[in-house]
Amino acid sequence: MLSDILPTGHEVGVVSGGIRAGDTVAIVGAGPIGLSAIMSARLYSPSHIIAIDLADTRLEAAKQFGADVTLNPARQDPAQIIAGLTDGLGADVAIEAVGLSVTFELCTRLVRPGGHVANVGVHGKSATLHLEDLWTRNITITTGLVDTWSTPTLLKLLRTGQLAPQRFVTHRFSLDRVVDAYEVFSRAGDTGAIKVLLHK
Image (tube, rainbow, N blue to C red):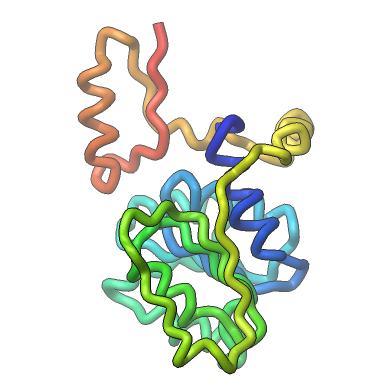
């Protein structure tokens, strides 16, 4: 958890996004990286953390990790709900934690003028940058890969109980049940699997 997902969500999402106390933060994608961003964003005292995902099991996990509001875009309009929470302005920071064009474009619609989109997701295909809509809004967009500079700090927060990365482990299997473990993880949307731990 501390070798990859927590530093990624923290550094590339939360720190690069410039989250400050009182901000409204929208996190698109509630997989392990999105949950890491939720967990570490709480350290900066935002007024709202909004988790957006199509899987209800992941939205339930987002609540456990500290999201104040969870939205399923198949049933709800995230832009409308976030506008209602922010007097029509939008999120101060939108974190993209999926890696799809549609989720990146959603983040650019959710962020307020002068806001920040922190792209954490790994994009295998191109995403459209709608400059025709964004050029007057002073939006900052950051991307990057984790370099784990924050790991020593995250370890201190773990030791003092301010972070609980053990929450990521939702299923445990002995090594002789490795096929079962992969099957559970392959159906994460149904099983609620976040991280599957194999042990002797």
